[in-house]
Image 1 (cartoon, rainbow, N blue to C red):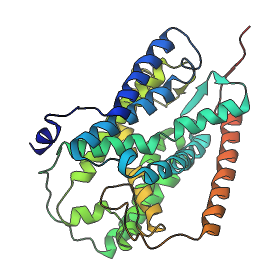
Image 2 (cartoon, rainbow, N blue to C red; image 1 turned 180 degrees about the horizontal axis):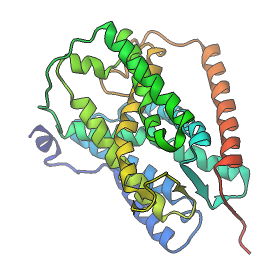
Image 3 (cartoon, rainbow, N blue to C red; image 1 turned 90 degrees about the horizontal axis):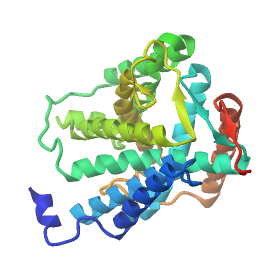
Length: 331
């Protein structure tokens, strides 16, 4: 296989991968010893270490990675990662599917923790997706070509609307649908305006990206739950009907929600890229339309809107989703 020739004769993990590996081992050891801040924020330490390791492996395989070659896009993923996850936090105010325990009682520390944790969502999913693709996973997968017509758009819009409204009207029975609704609403728009689109892949008979995202979602979901389980500050699920049989803190059937969530994140970010002249995080899109730039005033306004949105939702999480606090001062 091509990637083996690339790795042969060189280090498998580069400098930032070694740094990530050391950080992961040290944070796990210190977390188990109860040393702060590692025991409280172990989840974030673990995830940022993972991202460094995976990015390093990707760079060694293909000579191009998010952190090394697409650094600006990597840092742009962080605020959008927070923003996208906070949409689901807003939905949880109605669904009440999870709550947080042992949150630091100092506001700025708690909110900084939100930022550190939520900003890993997109980088984690996308790095994992790219790693699987670099290893030629699902490279030869194919499906019958699908002719996408405006009728598909209508069907997707109807399904998406139902998927978003039903969980809010009947949260006890329809809560899983929230993890797919945005996909059906935004994917037709991405396709219509020539953005990165899974529908366009299906038109070509290529399901590889779709399969990679599903697999990446399941992998990331496993790590989300594993590392959350060991942290002192964590989330606990209150999922109707399926709360008995668990793996870590997650009811087993809940793991089925991670693959579509990864697909949804990909579609949402592709939608955002439409407003950035189709620039995205992937190797073949991060340099799209380099001569076109968003006006500084617009970027500044967007940054202010995002910060206000973050603060408003963080406050809502503190008021509605946090179940318990712990003192940041010992003694």
